[in-house]
Image (cartoon, helix red, strand yellow):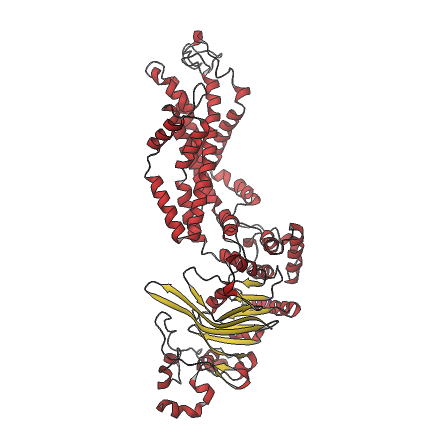
Length: 297
Length: 332
């Protein structure tokens, strides 16, 4: 017997169900297909950067400063995307920069999902006073300007990659919280939660093994969108000199270092800018595709 | 010894401006191997009574009872942790809608196994064997392959059987069944009832069975408690109550059962009027506004459960003294 996909509950996320859904929906879901393939490509570039990069991203060569990329007049295949103001190979820096962007994206999302989902599920499940406290924390968080607060924290503690991720995670959990809370509020009345209580499960156990699996679909969508947000913020902070420290490369930092040349060699800004644009587009497409796949109602 | 003893159980739930007096002073007893059926209209406190026993009332609800004993243990003295050990272990529960009562994201197998592992401290393999043997006992063919399936892949009847198996995973001595056959069609209903009855005889468990279907009561019950507006209005053995219902409400309920032998009788019987609001305090007999035999005295004071012949108790002024005393009571 074949089961109609529409009859499955929206959030069923077993391995077999996911595979069945993917094979069935990918041809009709171009967003998912395009987004995930671009993201996969960028991911592979980042992972295999040491093998793919033609030069070291840190090797300076002041004689080869500001060489143009190969597609422009005066470019050569020796440096396919040219060199920056210190003569470092731009393609290599772009490939290594992808590692930081993705690392910040993933790392931030894992941390902020942990914070947001934890508080959201607790607020929705216990309601009452717990909910009141969590909503107060959320209000406080929403009233903090991310840029200014980060500026203050980084100014106090100095900039480093782990601190960057931690600070971003502390600011990006709000969507996780809101979505987890509202879904949990609905699920706590579900009969299977009552059945779980009647089977003698503790509250913590019910939240983790009964409620959480039902939130996976919507939360995966939130995670992809927030990941794009995190990468953009990292780029912005690196541009301001608050993120990755030179000589490490990140796309935001590359734009920052190129800003002095923006009127003379605009490609220096455009190439990392385009990379950020493509990555964010891919993540957003993936998010939209997953939303259609997992959150149908 | 009685498995479950309830004395003067009272449940109040604050709603908006007032307080909903959902369960009013009910006392029940269930012996091992016995089935007690709680019968009544929607909203008469049947399900609330079950939830009160399990300690699963809404957070705002207040539960009071002079005794709420399970196997001699006073449940209201237990802390949350001890109560969790009793739920699922000593008392199993079967829900009305077997679709919504299963977690849609987990396979049947893992849901069954986890109950066993939680309470019996057993390993996955032991729990799996127990699940397979129980699924076989509830009449499911090829249980090994069923374990890997998800709730939405099973039919309603199968789901209800799995739910019964789940309630029995830890060999409970008491089973609370909240309208377990209401969501099923009639043939499946008969199968499930037969199954429950058979399991009860084999395992000698006590069952509290909530239903509004008198046909179901006749099929499974040993004792019956008829509830109206949050209180028990008549209780006794099924045979005695069915033979000679004492309370006018019980009589009216029987009047509503369609008579197949006499189809030409015309319209289905109904009870006129509506169940009184449980938010406003009820004076006198709760049923008097819909009762064909209501008298002035019915409005005076709350009526207590009065013993009748054959151990039947009924909450009616007419029942104990007999109908002859009509005149006296009216003039009292």
